[in-house]
Each structure stands twice: as C-alpha cells, then as structure tokens.
Amino acid sequence: MGTSLTGLEVIPGQALGLAITTVVAQCIGAKEYKQADKYIKYLLKLSWIYMITLNVVTMLLLKPILGLYNLSEGTFSLAFKIMLIHGIGCMTVWPASFTLPNAFRAAGDVKYPMFISILSMWFFRIGCSYLLAYSIGLGVLSVWIAMLVDWVFRSSCFIWRWRSGKWKNYAVV
View 1 (tube, rainbow, N blue to C red):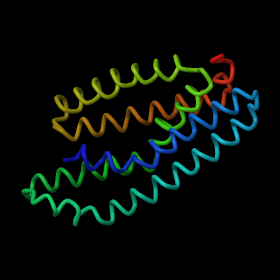
View 2 (cartoon, one colour):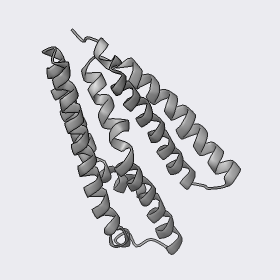
View 3 (cartoon, rainbow, N blue to C red):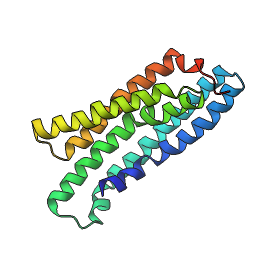
View 4 (cartoon, rainbow, N blue to C red):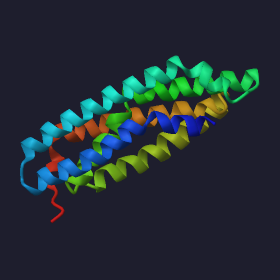
C-alpha cells in the first residue's frame, strides 16, 4: 500500500525529469551550456515547487486517504509514518536525487549518475536498512529511512557534480 501511494508523490518530479532530459539535450547539442544551466535551475526549481505542493496536500489528506484502505490501527500507524518519511524526502531531496541526474544523462554524462546510484543503493538502501532493522529493531521503517539516507547521499553527489560543471565535458555525438 505504501509503495502504491508513494508512487503518486513523485509524479511531478518524474515528469520534470523527462522535460529536463529533452531541454538539456537540445541545449548541449547546440553548445549552449549557459542556456542548459539556466534551464536546469528553472526546471529543478519547478520540480521542488510541484513536489512540495503535492506532498503538502497529500500529508494534509493522509488520514482520510489511509482511511479508505480500512487498515487495522497498527497498520494505519505504520503506513502513516511511512508516508510522512517519504513525503518529507520528496519535498527536500527527491528532485536533486532523481530529476537532476537526467540533465547529466542528457549531456552524455551517464557513468557518474549510474555509479553513484548503484553505490548508494547497495551501501545505504541495503546496508543501512539491514543495520537499522537488525541493530535498532526498526523493522519495515528501516527500509524507508535507509531510502531517505540514500536520497540525501545521491542529492549531495549530484549537486556537487552539477556545480563543478564536469557534466559538461561529455558529448553524445
């Protein structure tokens, strides 16, 4: 249930990820790097605005939405916590973790986002969730907390990459 509801919370970021890919690829193809930077800033800002708007509304309506599922009290409480963790992550770090790397891929810089994503998934999502589940006993919440830690790591790496300008050194054609 958490996975199906959380999928709705990222729709604006995914849509803008597709847009950023197309726009940045056009700019890079025309050798307009300043224009690419301008559009990345703009589309990333839009992604954050839409993600915050959607997730605030979702959080305000979370109890009635979860009420539609006819859950037990314990399951309701757990689902509520999961949705809050995910919603907070969507509003704070999701765009930099998933929308921004689409700009790199559009510019031909595909290895860096792939390497960071694989490394982060194994180290943080899997390793951290195992650690939190078995050493602290957080159960299923450990997976969602570890996912948020993964997003924080990815976003910091991708923001660093974007600011460094190294993503501009690759060419598709």
